[in-house]
Figure 1 (tube, helix red, strand yellow):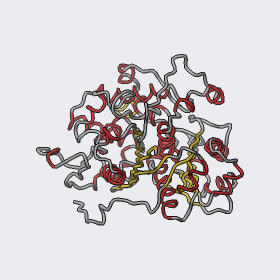
Figure 2 (cartoon, one colour; figure 1 turned 180 degrees about the vertical axis):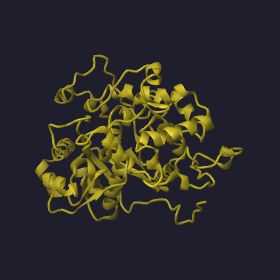
Figure 3 (cartoon, rainbow, N blue to C red; figure 1 turned 90 degrees about the vertical axis):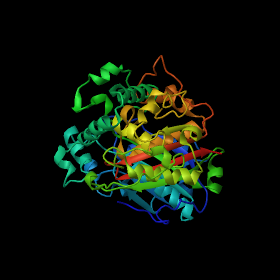
Length: 450
């Protein structure tokens, strides 16, 4: 059993304020043979810089560190790919670092940049994440990704992350008894929202019946309930306060960050008392006799969320956040995350969907971007993609970006006649959860409009 000391539970504190001032991305595709990874990263960086009020040349002169999240060198067959990207972006000889923490690579990259600025080491840090997942076939790609679980144990289940989460889903259904249709509604929602984004890879207007009757990837998960394998890039720009207000009139502040971890092998996760969030008390779980975290919860996610909430002064996330982006690699991981981060108590995640809270117009709209299920999972870019979507929402720019006809045309797409604006009215604060493996690494980042 894990026990905590005061130092373990220390609330993070930034030595100076940190702001996000720019975001850009490519669209995301299963195959992107027309562009090299370096070109995709440049395109994302260009979009982020073009929306600043200085020239690209002046921006380059302000950069003093850079962070490059990429999940796996295997896909692109290029070790130290961050050096190639850094050179292509024109940032040599400024220092940089590559980051890899599985599916949480993007979130960890953002945390790394935030800490560099907060410490005073740097004042302007671009973070550029990408993944090249189309130079190997899907089976080989799945095997590479599955290697982010314990190869001594989990890999024997079939070299597929879907299989790992299918087992969790079976246990979750048995322990908590949600309607099977509720999990399908998560896929329906996220594919549906993806229809209104020019960046999305697999938008869709599914019925619940179509989702439940679709081909099974690993029982009980069907194809529409699983994330995409994507190619694409996302860029963010973090700055200190002085630099931020020089670059834009409307920087967005980082008010909460957190990071958690847990054993790579899920069977090594020992039973322990539930780590309570600010909106919970011991009474919340009185009478609960299930092991925690067990096989259906993620200590890493709860730990990261707790840090971020306490740092940002959030006591009730559903009431105090305006939107969230969760790591919906599978429908079951999404409903697990609702509970881990306190949108509902453990065992009651289905209520978050069935109440309408998770939808646009609800108390805490979640994955309006389309998420990993509907829009993308270009792993190194994923956590950054989530933050970019929150950034545009809290600046009131979602419509300006996603409704741009020229952007749809640029990606060879037709803006749907039934296109819907998904801007959350007066959005001020949002949170992104970036998740790795079977919960081995998780980050939580809260952005707030000032």
